[in-house]
Length: 248
Image (cartoon, rainbow, N blue to C red; front, side, top):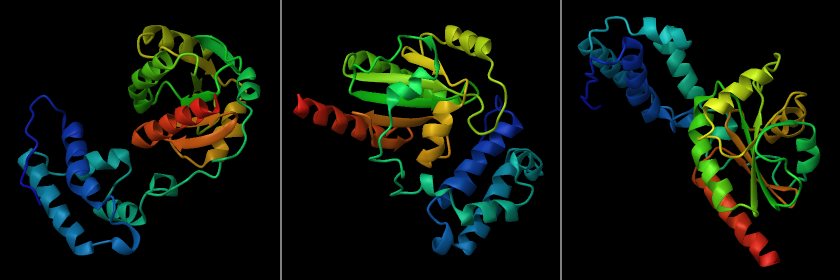
């Protein structure tokens, strides 16, 4: 185990423990779930974690880990040993792939907040399921904005906002408008609000991906990609552009 110690006086104890958890207890075990579990290695990691926490003047790190649901090292072990949901494992593919989705019909049930309404001109549509409370969603927005601008007329990028993506609660459209107004330089593509939960229930709930941002790439109303931003999405988008170009 590395002997690196977090020593940043500007960080809170919560931030230090979060960093140590990721560095020592989480990242090294991301591919060791199930039959690949190494109990001996994990016990060594616990001692390394405790040592680094103590050097950061944190005597009981579980007090801080308890705030995010880990009240004991056994809890952490059980979670890591179980592994991530299927959708986050290598080789996962959504059951929605190759299925038909009538994008225009789905978006007609949503209210446009920023940008232009999708009229069916672009053959390639990137549906970005997101919520205001989701930090990674905001982090993905600049790249999606760039795609919308660079491939205008060929690719329509549409953000589908639904604050109750995982639980039912009333949508606050005015709050969403304020959020997008404050972040207009980040979200430079069309954004709609899924007030009736139609997009959530007809598309997102069937794709099998259990997180946001969730990108669904649809080519000629056929789903070609479901998942997170990143290399997989970039590759799928590039393949979609090539396929549409060959059609033309």
